[in-house]
Image 1 (cartoon, rainbow, N blue to C red):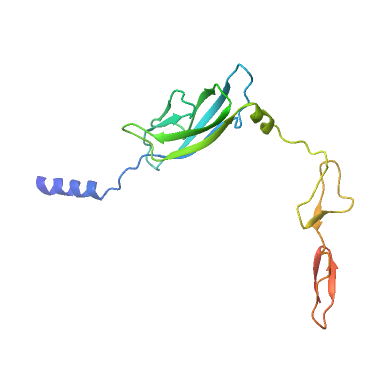
Image 2 (tube, helix red, strand yellow):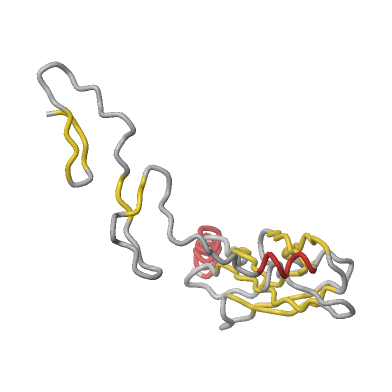
Length: 183
């Protein structure tokens, strides 16, 4: 009986699905682009999200290479931790850096992700949204509806074609309520 029980347990374990380590799902850096002032550093927040295999809650570890030759950072996830972890890094010089996140160590997270980080004085200008002095505008093929502009609110309607449609014999071109066709 003891032998049959051991064979049964071994067979059950062999048939059980393998437990996969969590996969690195996404990486984000804020602010990006990161402004930097002369004589100072650009401080950024790096967020790494893993995909946890459900219903299992497995630990894993990942390293972050900030791409500037600085020290490598490490993030670890343990049982019960949130999916997203954050850390900080300071870039000392303006430039474009390739930040890389990958699994490391005995309990490595699966996969790798990369993100481009832009640091510099030109980044400050890129981070500011452009002001629109021209007023509202519609996409190609659309026109502002007459009398619809009220401050930042407006309505666009389909623009009629430059030339009426060429309708088949026995039908006539029409244009009403934003629709065109041949009847």
